[in-house]
Structures are given as structure tokens and as C-alpha cells.
Length: 392
Image (cartoon, rainbow, N blue to C red):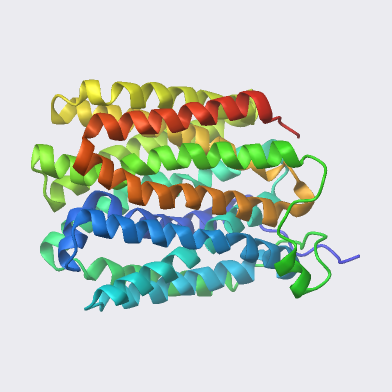
């Protein structure tokens, strides 16, 4: 039996993980408010760039391979590889002069995002007992909120003062620095997994046991994520078109939305362990469903529009962050694989959202965009109600 590897203090584990995830979340969200600006920068329209972002997210289908390898060789190695891959993609994007360079850069970025997020969650989950896991993962998700509060709002100002390329260069430098930080950490103890790298690559299906609930949990998360990403990818175009917002103003909107995200993540870290992960997921799904239904009705002026987007995101964030610890304990012996498969399905949902979100807004309007998200979330709700069980 392999001896346990050195453990991290809670403070150091959460601090470093949050800092790294902040950079990665900025990288993942950077296109959302500024989609029209980046599209103009690379010589595309918003629908075309949205489709390339869909292809970026499709690269998350390779996430289960990285999860299986992480279960065998350790999460830290995969996390460092992911950070360097995202850094390389952003350097290429910053110097891109042709559509094929943008396509290649976004494909590399998708590979890095698909490898980083689930393996970081598995890394942290492996360090924390189930009774504290929502607290730990919820605190790491503060990074998602800080992306809007700090990251995207500063990027809006940076674009106005310099160039659309500058943020990508700075993020690439940050990723390389975090790679060296992770090199100083002890890795989580390896799970009992495949006996060889070849088996790790080939054994991507889950074994019998709690399989139905595990796959259902993944599906529910993917449906909810697809619904939210439709709005996240399109709201910058929506607000720029209907309310004439430019880069700095869109950054300010991202700042405001970040506080809604933060409220959700803080709520998860305080309440989800107490009230139950499955119940918290249901609260988030039901709240976001109501928000999507009301969204077109409140699209009357900038303030109510931003408010309903923010409240809906708050419920989505509460549900999806509660979803991570719920999924992490469905099959503990295959945690890396489970988290990576879940990420792959969610990124598959993001792929669909990249094609559907901007297209629905441009061609059919806000109501079609919002109510299609409501339909997806309704399917997610039914999946959790009838197929998902909590297994502490």
C-alpha cells in the first residue's frame, strides 16, 4: 500500500487553489462581457467567435483522459500541465493575425480548462473530509466571483487604455507563475485506479455501483451549465446592442455580477454542508429557472436587466458549486475520473451554448435566449428529483 503523501493546511490549500482558479476563471470568462470587442479585434462577428468558443469548450471532451491519468499519476502534474497549456494558448491568441491562429489558440485553451478545473476539484476533495468539502470547494469558487469583481472590471479598463491583446499576455505570465507555485506543493494521495497508463486511457466508463446516480448528477450539472452559459456568452452583446455599453461599462457590469456570484459561493461555504448537497442543488436549479422565465419580462431598462441577470446567476452559482461536492462523493474511488467526466459533459453543454446563445439572441431575441435556458434547467430539475441521490 502506498504511504500517505504530506497533507496541506486548510489555509494554504484553499489560498493557493483560489489564486490559481482566479486566473483560470478570468481566462474562461474573459470573452463573456467583451465578446463584441474581441470579435472585432480578430476580424470576426460575434456569432463566428461564439462558435469558436463553442469549439473551445468541446475540447473538454478530453477531460476524462486527464482525470484517469491524474488518478494514476497525481493531480498536481495534470494541474501544472493545464496551466502551461492555457498560457501557451493565450500567447498565441495575443499574437494572432489569422482565423486559424484564433482557432488553434482556443482549442489549446479548451484543453487546458478541461484539464485544470476538475482535477483541481479532485485535488481539493481528496484533501478534505466530506463534511467540510462544500465549505472548501465553495471558498475556492470565490475565484469565480472575484473574476467579475476584480478581473473583468480591470480588463475593461485595460482594453480601453491599451489593446485587446494586453490582457492575454498578462494572463499567460500569471499562469506560468502559478505553475511554479504548484510545483512546491505535495500532491494528493493517488486513488486506487488503473494498473497502467494504457488502462487509465482506456477505462473511461464508470464501474457498476452507484453509476446511475453518478451519471444523472453529471447530466443535471451539464444541463444547468449549458443554460447559464447561453446567457453568459450573450449578455455582453445584449447589453452593448440594447443599452449601448462599451468596454469600461461592460467591465462595470461584470463587477456588479461578480458580487452576485460571491454571495452564492459564500452561501455554499456556510450552508450547503448543513442543509445537504442535493437540497442545495435543487434550490439553485429552482431559483435559476424562475430567473430565466422572468428575464425577458424585466428587460425594460439597464438596471432591472442587470438585476435579473445577477439574481439568476446567483442561484445558478449556488446550485452548481453545491453540485461539485455532491458529485465528488458519488464514486470516491474514482474521483478524478468522475469529476473529469462531469466536467466533460458540462463543457459539452458549453459547446452547445457557444453555438446557440449568441445565435438565439441575434436572430430570435432575448425571450428565445432566456426561455430556452429555462427549458434546459427544467430538465435538470427533473433529473435531480428522480435520479440523483446523495451518498455521504
